[in-house]
Image 1 (cartoon, rainbow, N blue to C red):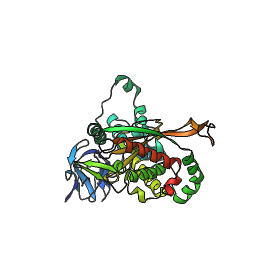
Image 2: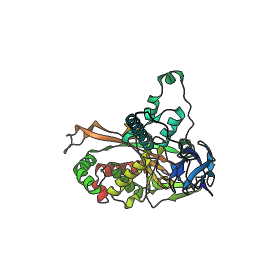
Image 3: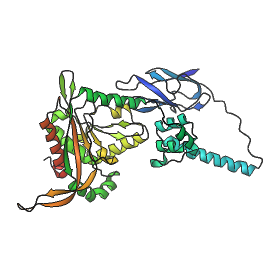
Image 4: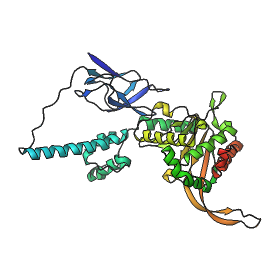
Length: 398
C-alpha cells in the first residue's frame, strides 16, 4: 500500500509553494516524520516530513516545480529499499579500511557542513555541479556560504561566464513585490534624529556579565530600542496603526517585527506582546529567531502579524538609511552604526559649552503619511531618543 506525500497547509494567505529540494530519492528508505523534501514559500522554507515509514516509490513533482496546498508531491511504498551491492576495495584489507574510513570521514564532514548551510546555498551547489567535499566552508558555525561556492568554481568558468542568470526565489520575489507595493501604495516619508548612546552603553557594560550569567543571553541594544519604541507607540498610536479600506485600525497590542538578513533574503520575525516581556525575554526571543533564521527553520507564524518593525542596518556598518515600510504597517524604525563623533555638550553655566566625543547613532523613522502626520513622526523619534539616552525613563514610565 502506498502513502501520499502532500503539501500541507502553509498558513496565512499562502496557497502555493515551490519544491526547492528533495532530501530523499526513489528507492531510499524513510522513517515516519523524517524530512523528505523542502518547500519554499514567499515567506519561509520548510521541511516536509514523511507521513509514514517505508521507501520513496515515486517523485511526482521535481525540484523547481510549483505546487498548490494539498498537491501530491510523491509516494511512499511499504517495505525496505533496495540496497546496492558494496563496491570492492583494494586487495590489502588495511588500505581498504583506511581508504573507506577516510572517504566516510570526508563525506560526513562535507555532509555536516552542507546540512548546516542554507537551502539557497545547497541549491547553488547543485546548480553549479560542484562536489561539496571540495568546498572549504568559511561561514559561521562551519557552514558553506555563497561566497565559498563561488570561490570554488573553476577559474576558467569565471573567465568564460561574464554573466550568470539565476531564477529569483519565491522569498526574493515576494520581498520585491512587497517593497514595491509599499512605495506605490503608501505616502512614505522619513524623518531623522540622532541619539547619544553613552548611557545605554554604560548601562549595558555595567550589567552585561550579571545579565548574561542569570539569563543565558547577552544584553543587546535591540531590547532597549524595542522598549523605547513601545513607550513612543503608546503615546502616538497612529504609528502602530494600519489602513484597512476606508478604516484606520488602531492596535492596542505591540507585536514588534525585527528585520533579520539571511542568505535567502530579508525576513521579519515578530516579537509578540513585547510590552509584556522583560528585557531578558525579548533578548532570548530575538536570539532564538536568529538561530532559526540561520537554520532556515522560521515558520509562517513567526513572520506574521507584526504591528511595527525595527531594522538595524548598523550591524552591516550603515551610518544612515531610509528604511522602507513593511506593509500594512505604518511605521518602521531604522537603527544605524554607533560612531564616535564630536558634539556640542552644554556646560553647567551659560557660556561654558564644550566639544566632547560621544558615541552617536543616527535613527530614522519611515512612516505612512496617510495615517501619521509629520508632528507625530518627529515626536515619535524624539520620544525614542529620550528613552534610549536615559533608559531609566523606561523603567519608571517617564
